[in-house]
Structure formats: C-alpha cells, structure tokens
Image 1 (cartoon, each protein chain N blue to C red):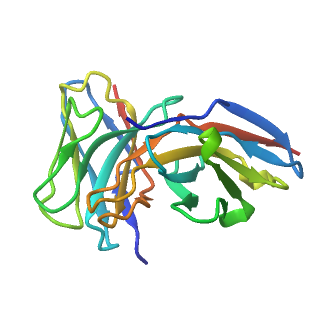
Image 2 (image 1 turned 90 degrees about the vertical axis):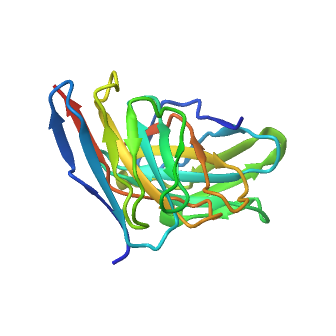
Length: 116
Length: 112
C-alpha cells in the first residue's frame, strides 16, 4: 500500500527566507506525486505535480519540487517566502492511472507560518 | 466558470440525526470523491465513484453513505452510525484515469 510521510508538522520562516517542506513516500514503482495547499477553512489547490520526465517540477506561486527516486522524496521548495504563503501544505501520492479513478493518499500536512 | 460547489459551508446537527452534504461539479469529470479532514490527520478517503450508479468504499466508509444518480452530483450522507461525525468534509473530482483531483471549498459539520 502506498503511504506518505510529512515529518514536519509545523514550520515557521521569516518573510523573504527560503523554504523547504519535506515529503517521503512509499510505493512499489514510480508514483504520481502532488503538492496541494490549503488556506484555513478552504479547499485544496494544486501547486504542482510529477508524473514522469524531468525530476524538477515547477508549479504555481513560485514553488518547485524535486523528485528523488533514491530517497523516495518529493520536497517542496520556494526561494523567497511571502506572508501570503502561510497555509497548510499537503503532499500526496497516487498510482499511475489504469483507467480507473485516481485514488490519492495524503500526508498529514505541514502548517507554514510566516513571520514579518 | 467550471468548478466544484459544496453546500452548505457550515452545518450543525443534533446527535443521532442523519445529514446530507451536497457536492456538485460542472467540470464534466467522471470520478468524484469524498474526504474527511481532521486536525493533524490529513485527508482520509470516505467513498469514491468512477461512473454514474457506481461507487466504492474508501478507507473510512463506516457510518457514511453516498449516491451517484447524476454525473454532476455526489451527495454524502452522514448517518447516526458515524460515531464521531464532527469534521471538515471535502469533495473532489477528476477525469477517469487522470490523477489530478480538483477540490471543492468544503463543508464543516458540527454535531452537537
């Protein structure tokens, strides 16, 4: 069974500082990987996704993530954090599609706080 | 605009009552999903549906029921058998075989 671990429950960074959120997954083959962001009381918005190809993936809002097969990781990065980035971030893993619905497994999330 | 709508945003019910949460999408997606979110536990899959009149249990289906009579709609009923129903409920949809899921704004259910 697939699983996702986000080891950091809560991270605080200063505005303008760099950010890295960690995500480790467990899956038998190369999975589909996602990062979603959630503002308080809202739904989830997709930041970026990895299916195949280039292991460095660019997303919206200046985020990027790197797939490292040897480490089973898909860490999210941003070079300079803005106060509006404060939110909860979820990593998710899915099995490559076989024509059926795409079941995703989510990590428990990392809450990002940005100090001014 | 295409998207997913969930209603109501906030829902209060007395213990022992069944309650139905609405989810509608106009993205022409085949698959729809219901998740439950609790603090510190991420999202857990309750039910999902790949086509009309068909649905499968997710990881935490006990105490919940769903129907899929129309492609656009996937309502979730929280029954009195659900022991701890107070939570934030998220509906999502995706294309068949497509793994990207699009989420609605959520419904916060509080059972008093």
